[in-house]
Every structure is written in structure tokens, then in C-alpha cells.
Amino acid sequence: SFTSYHSSELKATPKPSIGIVGSGAVGGYYGARLWESGLYEVKFFMRGDHYEESKANGLNVTSVHGDIFIPPGELQVFSDTNEMGTVDWVIVAIKSTALDSIPALISPLLEPGQTRVLAIMNGLIEDDLVDQLKKYHGENVE
Image (cartoon, rainbow, N blue to C red; front, side, top):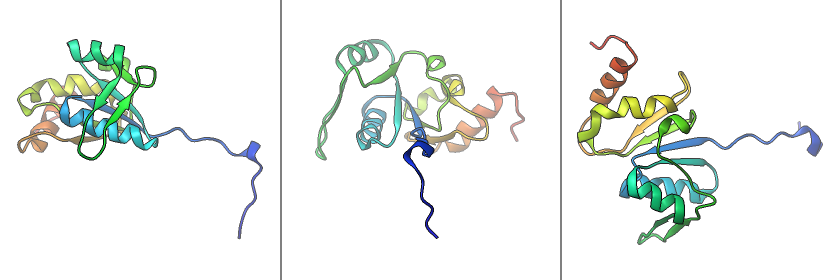
């Protein structure tokens, strides 16, 4: 059966949130595509000049599949993951040579039992990343 609701009874649900850690070519591209869909709240972690440039001028991604520009007023960019809050998804797109730094970077974004982590990195590092996260949080690694 069909249930009728008055608009005052409907509540907006928040968009799923995604934290992009590693907002270079790969992370920037996927983060911008997700932002472009309008279905997600996308937060970008950046450092140094990339952070300053994007905060001031927005994020511009050029692609053979269509360019994307996120204006500075709409771009959620952070230079410290501690300021981003927890998210539903973390996309890790930093070089695998920085594997040891990942747990400290993404831990502030994790909500135990809720946040999912997707690693888009070169090399076969899934088990290594899981082990690093367990060690960071004081769990046994076997």
C-alpha cells in the first residue's frame, strides 16, 4: 500500500560524506567526480602550495571525459585531517611509499563500525595498510 506523507513530516537525510586523502591527480579526479554528482559531501585533504592554491582559487580538474571546476566557496579543503571530522568513506590516494603515514592521517576521519576505507594506490598494499591501522590503534597484528 502507498503511504502519504505531508512535506512537514519528511526529513532530509544528510549526503554521505567522503574524505579524500591524497588530492593529487588520482584523488583529485575521483573526488571531483564524486562532488560533481551532487550526491556526496566531499572533503579534500591537501598540503602546502596545493592547499593554498585550491583554497584561494578552487579545484580545477581537466579530463578527456569533461573538465570539472569546484569553486573556492564550494570546495571543502583542509590542511589537517583533524579538522575534517568523521566521514562515511575515506579514499586514500597517496603514494604507497607513504604507507607508514596513513594511519595517523586517516584515523581522525574514522567512525568505528561505520567508515569504510578505499585505497587507490599503486602496489599491493591492502594487507599492509590494515596491519598499519591495527598497530596504530593498539590491536594485535598476526
